[in-house]
Amino acid sequence: MKKFLAVLVVFTLIAGVAFADVSLGGSFGYAADVLKGDNNDAHDLASAQSSKAATLDLNFSGENYGGRVRLYGATTGPWWSGSPFAFAWWKPSDQFRFQIGHNPDGNFGAAQITGWGFLGSAQDYVAICNDSDDLGTDVRKQVRKAGFYPGFSGVGALMSIYPADGVEVNFALPFGKEHSDTDIGTATMKYPTWRALAYFHTNVGIKIGDIGKVNLSFKGDEGLMKNLPGEEKGPGDIYLSFFLTAVENLRVDVGLDYPLPYNNDSDLLVAPGLKIGLGATYSAGDFGVKFRAGMVLPQAIDGKVPDATVSGTGTVSGGDTQFAVNLLPYFNLLDGKLTAYLNTGLGIQSFKGQSDATIIDWYVNPYVRVPAGGLTFWAGFKLIGTGTKDKSTTAWSIPIGVSVGF
Image (cartoon, rainbow, N blue to C red; front, top):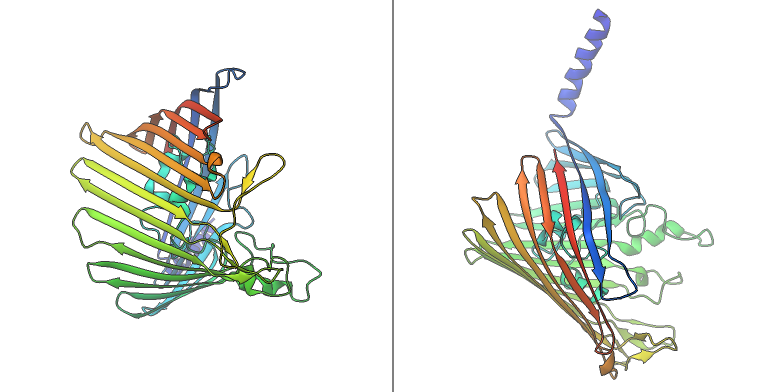
């Protein structure tokens, strides 16, 4: 017994030296639609419930290194799948940082307002957003995706250089495509692993005093690798954004995504449409409001935007312009014991030469957040519609939820 205690003490001392700080945390939750329905008379009223992924985070750090390992308990795999959520970083000096592994939460992302944090955890329980399975098309999701460098969320090695105060230069070398560490090619390729290099990222961020921050980024795509499947794609995207912080209580974020043009199999120049993003927040006491918008311009081929085409099944494609806007005013009530939100949105997709095919998505989504220690209670109402002038669908639901963090 004494030997066991001695070994335990030694191990504890070694662990304490190796990891100056080790912490555990996690979360889980449950969500339900108390009642839901739509304007289709053939559908009965219904209800549904779902459990949110239970997570356990192990965070560790020493004097110049650290990392995270996240464990999931869920009925289905996480959205990123492909590789475990685990990464470690090493920073031997103030001018250099190295990271290896997989951080699906992303690194170097430039969107300061329009990303996940716009709605936060509410989108898992009561808020209509990109990640929810509510009625609507991908049009309304441009408020979150358009214009801003998304950061690196794949499996790979990351390097950051800090040459001067307020300046950072970041590189990401992927081990695979997107969020997979194996989807990088086929056995018929001579050097399939090299394909992963086509997806490299680079980002430069420059902070300008109290005025704001400029981000310039490049995200590679399959077009960088010739004689491989997928060469119909372009070489990648260039992103430029500016985050304004100079005005008290106001933050503004403007972003531009320029997909690089390429020649298709018919040797025609394809110029994918520009993507533009805008985000803003304003707060004054117990009142605040958030705004975000996104636009995607149509693709041009050989210098012209072609008219949209209609398939035999009536599906319209090509020649489309997409625009979406999202407004979120909120109020802190009862001395912070309750916060009320009004989540509203509109998305429009118009097709060149097919004016009758214009698609409109809209929604009104009030909800409340009630914190109670480590628990948060959610309740709301969703009203959402989508369709064209000739055919549309409207749906509604009463969502509730509880999230737990520890």
